Image (cartoon, rainbow over all chains, first blue to last red; front, side, top):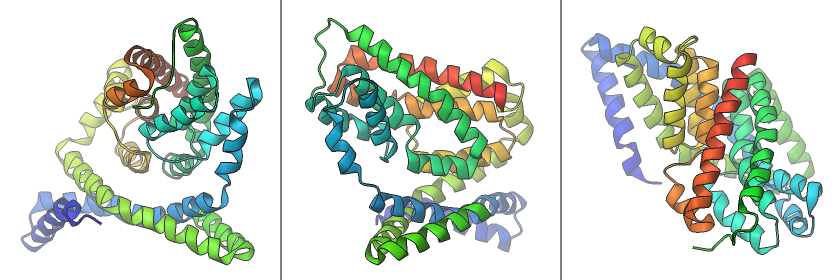
Length: 170
Length: 156
């Protein structure tokens, strides 16, 4: 763990502490704000991460990966969406994987659908979203995003048809 | 909160019943991720408490609250598109912002653009797909994100 990351939070806490000591009103108010946010998250987050950790060890991603290339059409689309949902990480982490899918013979449409699903409906992310913004918000966003990124897949396929498109390994 | 605690306890118990070792690995992995995230989370919360102190709630509500309309959305879409915040930070942040008076629909635009559009990562994306294709994908995603935000505002 990188200790330098704690420099700013440490200064912040010292500042709050001094504010209490010298009754500096603004500092105390900022401290109260911070505590309000922090106390909730410190209870919330470890529970969520335990869930995500368990999810990570139990979900057999490799099994789905094996089927990806062989399947075309709707079944292939379903598989790439499922695979994307089971992953975690930022969008740029999906690019190398898109390259792998391309190598395996995945269609252009499904590659972009994979990117869409990866960016919007990863399950570990959804647990966070539900926890912090509510089930209704999360469900709505998922249901609305799904047709949109499938449409993007079709649009990209149409746009790239006839062009010499390939996913490159940088 | 209660639901989450019960869900976690139940999952741990079920998992423990089937495979002890896997359960330990899972818990350790999860808590490891949490500890890795902790400094960034502390930083984010500290910054947000500072910023929210200097930006009065009325101002936040005026520019990003209910009825802030196109202006609020444009701001949310801009920040969502250019920033590179992991979801593990973005959702707690959104929660704090909602509590401070930012509208759910504004948050929806922020979250969808944050997830789907990556202007900072465009050069990286271009190395895999080519620049033109990446720009087209980001533009389409931007449109989709705005549309998703608009649709969500009808329901929230």
